[in-house]
Image (cartoon, rainbow, N blue to C red; front, top):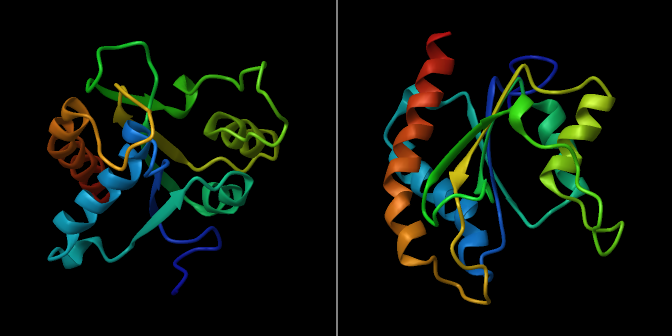
Length: 165
């Protein structure tokens, strides 16, 4: 991979989620939808697309290497299932206590660790939907599935704004 700065490619899109946990897999589905839409757009050659799946701490290097990071994920914001959620790095909540294990690393934990190490991306946006069901299933709920096109379109707008700025 060609490096365009010491941090990495100017823009990284990271899809995260579990594809066999219903709407929790939304970030991966959204990444695939975005990839299909970017397929013919050579102008997006400086965008790295990363399928983060259910990786935890291993994603810290991706977060810290990005200058601008767009994260696609299911986001529990207490909204109606299928509602689009967009958060800036400052809106991403602090790590929660009460995890069942110290081995459970959340995306919030990664952001907190990158912040602690003074290696946050210059810009970070978390984009996704409010999950409806995270029960065992390889399918998105109807509401999450219906939100895919709008989330992919919003992701494209974010990427274009980052290219222009």
